[in-house]
Length: 304
Image (cartoon, rainbow, N blue to C red; front, top):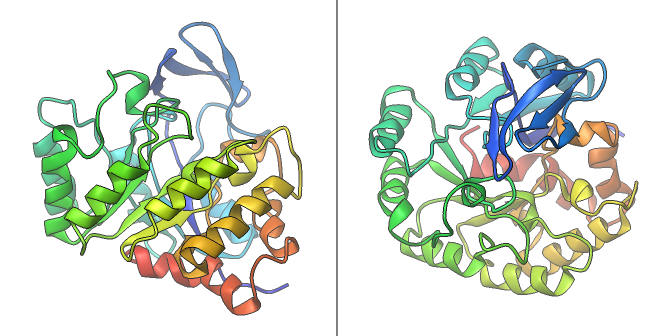
């Protein structure tokens, strides 16, 4: 089936340098990495990188799958890659759109964000606040709508940039849909995208329903990246993941859902094609709606 695709949630990293609740995450070869506490995880599938997932590798993967554009997001899991993300976008200007990030607890966070937006030209800023792989994994819990981010959000809004938030899964201290709703209402002209459809896992249907109702707002979108990953141990075609997407369509509308994959890690469990095909085979969307989710909506929320 011929379909136009924009992957709104991808990652590249020149050198894996993650950090989280288990300390630093360093590559050990073969696409695997080890946390400081000794836990080992598979990060990159065979053939796509030993210790890095480069812009060249991602570009080849996207072109093989006929993807027109991709947004390069960042977070603590792979390590901040601002310079490399920007270099990657300059290397492939017709393919990649870069997003910046920083830790708001840095003493110079305001300066960094100003530099990224006003000197380097980033038009997307992502903050991964999640307790699992983000800021609340290695900082004390905080309110997303509180003082920690207040100046950052104001700067992003004033610049007309898009704010991306990963607030983790239901049950985590970082899961604060009510806080994101307050931010969206405080800055009604700022476009906000929430990653992973609020990252529900098996058994989270009720909390997803509640969170989506709180966030059914004109300036809020949701990407579908890693929905299949989060419903493990289910496998393709991820029936619970399909039900989560159906629920989201009913509450916020197909026009607020944005397809993405979260590659490379999901490729350790399934093929790139299956990360979009499960939506098609689930008969969730009409042809028109599928075109919105897989392509048009990304252009609505991102500067593509």
